[in-house]
Length: 47
Image 1 (cartoon, one colour):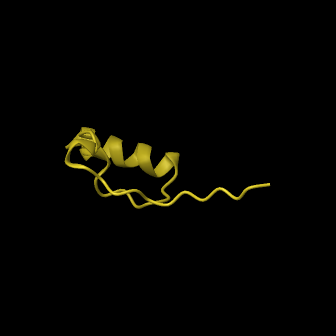
Image 2 (cartoon, rainbow, N blue to C red):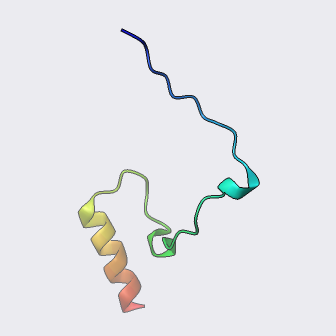
């Protein structure tokens, strides 16, 4: 059986990440659950 390892490959200029529309999630900690995310979004709507 062969072993599979995924090593990061170098990025080309053409290999840029697509733009992400996730500014509404700024301020949410990594690992936050659904409730925390919902509360954060609800607070933003009120502002």
